[in-house]
Length: 363
Image (cartoon, rainbow, N blue to C red; front, top):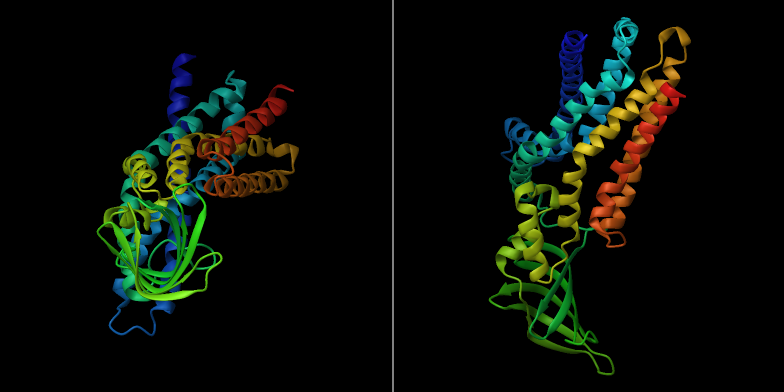
């Protein structure tokens, strides 16, 4: 019996891995084609940009998207493998031989853990490096630079010898060292608001921001204009270059270091901290997808209702994804801690998937 379980285990492991890989390749390939067409449309008016160069840019952008859709690939691949095994009566034969649902869930769970771990420690660093290169090319082609909020503005929270300040800019150039259409909200060292400074441009110089053609507004005073306003800062050019990288363009092995350096420079580290915890939680998230897939696809074909169960599994996966996005937004805004925002969806999803399997298999 142990030989049968061992042989069956290797067979199931290969089947699940092959199916998940096929689903991953199909979805990523489709995304590549659509992104390539969209970038071709955007670059249509640019002189000297060839389709080959756009194909290269698309290739650099694709791994980051592939990381985001990986949980769905595991969900769809696991469901497809379970349904195929059930349709061919292979799982029925395994059950008749005394193999429980928990035993033939071990191979896909092991595959999910291995894929999750590999994607974090190996694939993510490569994806991040490619994303950095893609961002540079996009900035050169389309004029996009920096990390933007939903309304297109850039925000920097920084500190200096004179206190803290929050800078808002319409655009950033040269890795954040040059800002355009800047508004600075300056605070005293004790946290009291001091003044508002609006300038056409701001340039990072050693130890200070130089805001040119600035207008200063302070409580109880008339606005006044100055040629150059110097705002002390602890941020260096390296700090800003790293800050203007999106968290998904920072390799996993560098996230903790950059998070600590950003915090020391007075910059907001929430995005980096959340990305680090999300990557740590990824293997468990993939396991949650496997359990959800098992709960919605282990029904015998003779019982009917396969379409509804598959639809239910897909819906459950999307609900978990939406919950993850909402909780992540709370974590990035500082409402929830990064660890809670990153781990709670994976933990809750795993518990609900396991509970559904228990109820379905053991009553």
